[in-house]
Image (cartoon, rainbow, N blue to C red; front, side):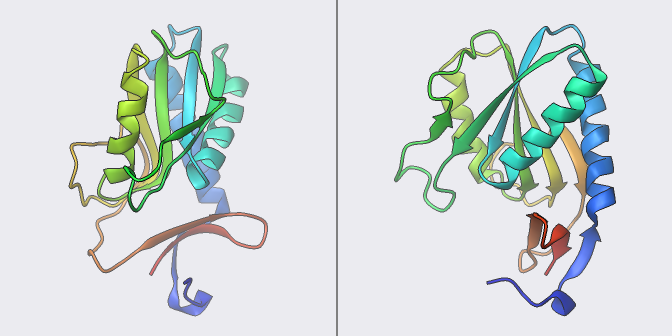
Length: 171
């Protein structure tokens, strides 16, 4: 349940999010400038939206071909349902994969997703996140971070990327 706006603290507005996305795109390009193609795999829903935004920026600043991949999984109990990829049979062998999600909290979602990619023998797997909360319970660290924020376990980061509400909020 989302809190009313007055009970949420805005930490990133639309312009700041777009600035973070552009900076991450440049960092991805700088670290992978020798690649012909890379895969941006976004965790549905916000991670995929961010992956789409990153793809647009990367294609504007670099010659790298970007393949988008949508990853769907049960974030609460990831082993209860299979992890789905769309498209279903992507070509990932010897490719750089950048796994994208909106908030990195404990690393659970990303840790469970990594196994899906490792079965395809990628060249390397990197992680991009808009907000890193620094509560790792799994050995997962972001390669690219838009905003780093130390929070308490009781606080939550909510990211909204739609017309009605666009921003990252702390509640």
